[in-house]
Image (cartoon, rainbow, N blue to C red):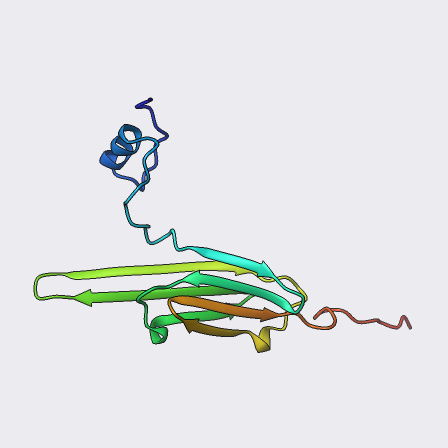
Length: 132
């Protein structure tokens, strides 16, 4: 067992100590905001991006496409009488050149968001130019 750990400015010193102390045990600490489970699959017709978004209403999830990037994000706030809890997430993927940006779809079911990115038949920016 080693008490030396790589320094990470985003982690608390207590987390580093307990990770070393309980090395080998399964962590029961919840995932942080930056650790949303994602899965990207290449299919015959395009790409499927799946993200775990349990408890996040679909009207709070945003899917944006800009400058050849698809970005999935959400911000959720829960207020009680004594406190306000906020969690947010944002992740972007660079799109390949042969995707049909106009027909990207997103469906949220059972806590899983699936973003479907279809391919185009031909490359978006391909054409033959006649030399004159």
